[in-house]
Every structure is written in C-alpha cells, then in structure tokens.
Amino acid sequence: MYIPRVFYVETRFHAREPIESVGLEAFIGISETVNYLEEHVLKFHGIVLQDPVERELFLVTTGEYIVFTPGYTEYCKWHNGPLDKRDDPLKRTYCLKQAYTRLGYCREHDESLKALYDKCFASTGIHYITSCRKLDEKIKDLTYVLYLLDYGHGLKVGTTRAWRLYTRIGEQPHIVATKFYETTKASEIRSLERKIGSREGFTERPHKRSLKDVIAYPPKLSYRRLSDVVKKLSRELGIELKENILFRVIPSEDIAFYAKSREVSLSSIVGRKLEIIDYWAGYLLLSEPGTNTYYILKTKEILHRDSIGAIK
Image (cartoon, rainbow, N blue to C red):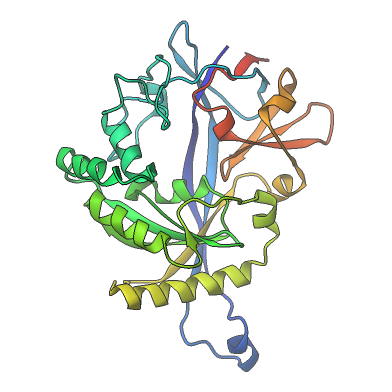
C-alpha cells in the first residue's frame, strides 16, 4: 500500500485579456473601468506517494495506472518543507505516525510550524488567534495574501502564502478570483478574513460547491459580481487597491473532460485499475482503460491515507 502525500503542481501564466463589459455598459457601449482577466494554467506533474515500509517518496504521473484501497489509516501530514518558499516535495520528510487531531497531525507534531499555520487559518474556534500570534512570533518574513473568489453560487474569502496564491486558487472550484490584501502578520490577515467571511454573501468554507455547477455557471456574471464586490469592500474597509486584476486558474487538460466525468467516492472505485489523467480544483481526473468513461475524485478522500494499493 502507498500513501498519497501531495499533488505535485505548479502554475504558469497563460494570458491576460480585457474583460468584456456586461449589462448596461455593454448595451450602451461604454465601460467605467477596464478590468483584465488573467489566465494561469495548473501544470500537474503527478502524485507524490510514500511507501510506509521503506519510507521513500516517489512520483506517479499521468498515463500511469493505480488501484485504490479503502484507506483505513490516516497518517500525520507534518513535513519538514519550508513555509516561506516553494520546495521540492520529493525531498520532504513525512511523519508516519497516525494522526490524532482534527487537522491531521500526530501528538509529536501538533505544535510544528505547519500545524500552527493550519490552526491559524483552518480552525474555526476562538483559539485560532493564539496560533496566529504564535506563528507571528516564530516567523517574521512570511507574506500572506487574502483572496476573494466567486464560485457561481457564492463568494469565498481565503488566505494563503503569497508565493502559493495561484496554486491555492487552482486547488479549489472557482470561476474567477482576485488578490485583495497582503501583510506579514498572520493574526492581522486572519482577523480580516473572518470579518469578511461573516458578511452577507461571503463564506470561508462553502458547504456545497459542485465542480459541475462551477464549470456550467455563466462566467460573465461572476466577473462583474466579483469586480463590483472588490470595489465596494475596498471602500468600506479603507483598503487601497493598487490594481483590480481578476484571474482564474485552468486545468492542463481540456475542461470538457471534467464536465463530462462522473464524480465518485473512494469506496465506489476501490479495486479498479484506473489511469491518472489530470488534477485540478481539488479533484483527481481518472479514466477507465479501454473505455470513454471518466471519473473525478475529491482528493481529500485519499491524501495522507493508505489509499493506493497498487501501481500498474
């Protein structure tokens, strides 16, 4: 059995185009401001797997075949990679103790920098601010970015490290996104994130965000809505925006493969030999050999679990 540890990806700039005016502006042929849509491509290199016996890491790439198992054991997701810059995921050290916290850490690594980061930005209870302050004490030169994204049926606010912005957006179902604020203080940006997340129409964690709905949603509506919201928020919060650039992160493969695929649970595909096709928006795209059948599987179901039984 093997443990999927991370989806090895990077983003590459693709294009920057003016966004068409919509509604009244389009009807009368004028636009108050010119907004631009940037496109970035999420390049999928493969899945980094760990052998729990030999402890070694290796990469399985597109075109290879895997067979899933139920994934009974969840392992600690601590690793020794840096928080402040991109590293080589094949050179990390992952812990093979079983996770015991809700965020996926073992007792030994529950106060690691990585765990503090997750406690600060992923926790919903009142103790998140303590972790944010600890993080600020331990690391001084890390830049955080607060982003806004539109996923069709709502708006999401989130925070990530500045160097991970496009990758983080590419890991989520979205139509369009933008950078809204940045700072080197985790406690400051987390407080702002919670403040915006409590506003009507916003959420920090969408309860239902179907990838199929996102793909089918009319893009122009999302472009205009997010652009208008950014202007309104900046005025109300007193945040000066240097530029209002909207962007999206698209998959390497044609998005039509995702649109025609069937979303499945891990339990429904256990034991099948499946080909790895692509990864985007938090989903692994797979196909059944010799058929025209495609599946998408939420990657949260398999990460840090003994969920891959064989590679063929």
